[in-house]
Amino acid sequence: MSQNPMYYGTYLQLEKVLDAQHPVSFNEPNQPAHDEMLFIIIHQAYELWFKQILFELDYAAAVFSKESINDNSEDLNLVRHRFNRIIRILELLNQQVSILDTMTPLDFLEFRNLLTPSSGFQSKQFRLIEARLGLQIDRRHQADYYKRTNEGGFTSSDYNTISKVEDERTLLQLVNCWLERMPFFEEKFWQTYKGSNGTEVTHHPFWSDYRNIYKTGLTEREQSKIIDFDYVFFEQKHETLDEEQMESLRSTFSPKALRTALFIMLYRDFPVFQTSYQILDSLIEIDHLLSSWRHKHLIMVRRMIGMRVGTGNTSGRGYLEGALNKHYIYRDLSGLSTYLIERKKLPKLPDELIQHLGFNF
Ligand code: HEM
Picture 1 (tube, protein in one colour):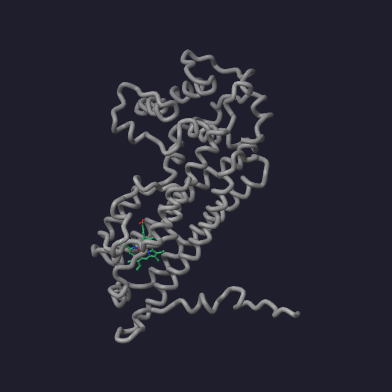
Picture 2 (cartoon, protein in one colour):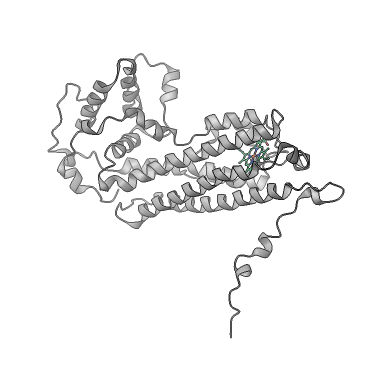
């Protein structure tokens, strides 16, 4: 039996895709608003790219869910590669805002009221990206407002899907476990380590040395950073730390995972740390690009609707500013720069460790 040859439009299901743009202002008795077509297409383009981002994030989550990941296998390399793809997509999504900027506030006003109470606030896929990456409900701006199914909120079905993903282990938690599993500080690798034998050997010899070097490098105004260091990496509470300071230092990663992440950042120039380093760096970059998009979107919204409330019934600009300030997911990874030291001061790693790196963890 001969099969029909594949046809471009059939393969891409273009009949469906291209029959999905129906501006409501084109329906009687409304006045057709020319720019509503752009408004629909740009949102649909965003949603298609969100779909691809979720696809890549699901792959990464599946890899990090494995009990052990071989550092020399294709797994980590593919995660790195696909995170890089997400970065490129987010760069594009940032640029896309300028296309919408060709619509003026007056153009928007021609159809804006017809959209109420729908809003980008209800984008299920955007929420799934946030949830999959690790934005927890209790860290959200206006958490109560977010979790609702009344008018302007989510449908019950979208709400359930989002809640389900929020209950799963997030990428942040999976990466935390991966970092915790890394065996860099096992005693057997440090038998020949020649530390500086400083006076405060309270930790692993590497960290005792590192703490001393870090402390010595702090300027007069930065002296309190050593107190933060002890709390962030070793949960040691200095008597001068109050509850508010501890809260601001408390991380979404465990101290053990943060120590490993810092170690990888410090020794990133060793080829064996490259993939792990790039994965951590990609997560920081993804967070950064999402935040950059929030900022661009906010500026665009400010121009488009000024101080008016959003169609989704938030305070509009105020809500978006809150989300922009609060919805960083990998802030604790980018914050590790606070604790770096100069390359030339890095302790020399023992040969045993270098030789054994690259095994399963
Ligand atoms: C004329 C253009 C736009 C205006 C005036 C606008 C306005 C707003 C406003 C006011 C909000 C806050 C929620 C509300 O009360 O409605 C919001 C949220 C949101 N919008 Fe837009 N928006 C526009 C275009 C877009 C586009 C093209 C996207 C792409 C998908 C988008 C995605 C979102 C998302 C994801 C949120 C939730 C943000 C968060 O919770 O952090 N918006 N928008």
